Figure 1 (spheres, rainbow, N blue to C red):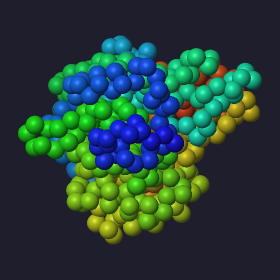
Figure 2: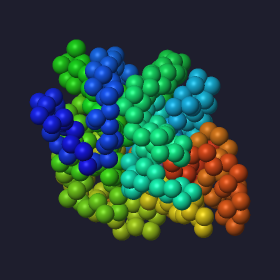
Figure 3: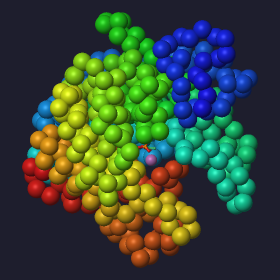
Figure 4: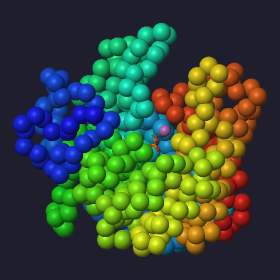
Length: 402
Ligand code: PEP
Ligand code: CO
């Protein structure tokens, strides 16, 4: 754990005084202060009126009048922020959202893990590659995926590169929203406080603070402490925000997140993303949904059926089985229906490329080792390809009103 303020420096914001897990180790890098100054002066990447529009859309989801689909890479690559690749990612999101809209007979709000999903929380600070212990890859915002000690050093200049690449992707998203009323929005895990915290801006019209780095930030499972810096950062801004809930999350934990992130009980403000695992969901989810419902928080409920269902093959490669992912998402819908609460939709890790990272569907599990190796390009967790994601939507939303 690294404190977020320099020793002796005055705190600049409330989150700077709180413990921040999962932060890069780069305070003593010669470029650190200069990078921070540049980011503090940079124009915001998203606009307050965009945030108001997205919040209105999410309020409709919270009321059960629309759905939400949030999809994209586990870890976005700086190298894939080209116009061509971004266009393919937006097209894949649209195709999947159209399919979901067809099945449920409602509008679908489209959100990409896109335009800033460049940082990863890690369980282990190091990993062993070919017998050599290296610092873990933490996403292109922090270090390189290349397996060498130098490439894994935490480099704060990456914050400026991330800002530039994010800007390119945000321009493509904005162009698509001008073409289509149901155009896509950006989202990412607001993990690196030196990045997202430096891009907090004030709306000149309302005086409210907003996160200028993305439309819809979330806090992940490892950084979701209601008393920590990440939750304080999201509590301080008016963006729509989300938080992940895991198998160990208690009703009291969920209510503490609601109190911090949705004190005024506003529909569209807070999304809770359940990623509890297919085995645990039937028992773990109902007490969480009931507690939040009974406390009067009109949150959007989303199922992330990916992160609680990760397996390792014999060679140590991470994968997930489509059947297990379908099982968690289907149970999620059944639990929400039984609690009388609208089910917002799905949060998925997907690729527009024909990747072979998850098994199931056209990728048979009995041939997993060979098939997985043929096109496994994820920088982090295994993603569904577009055929697998389409099959998931068809199998989970079986009838038009589910
Ligand atoms: C993720 O969404 O890629 C992730 C790391 O999720 P979680 O925080 O739920 O583990
Ligand atoms: Co992931």
